[in-house]
Length: 76
Image (cartoon, rainbow, N blue to C red; front, side):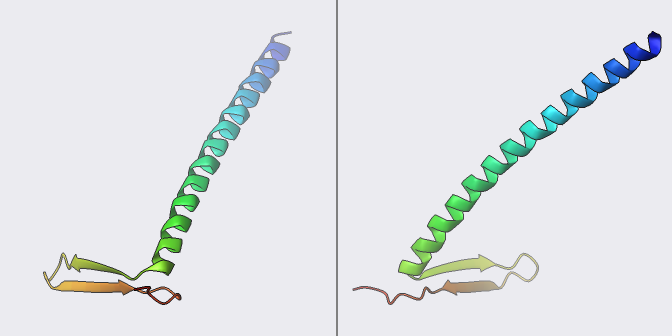
């Protein structure tokens, strides 16, 4: 009798854990979809126009310039 209650309680806990994990996986999937949408929008924008990123090296202090050019020709 006591063993049945323990196994039932364990099964319920396991089921609740699985439901929690599924919910967290769904939230992670939604976040990844949002990130994918943002990256896609940025990539499409980069393909339309050149972008230059200027970064200063944290170790030596030297400026670094990174130019991203798309496949489309820039429009005038």
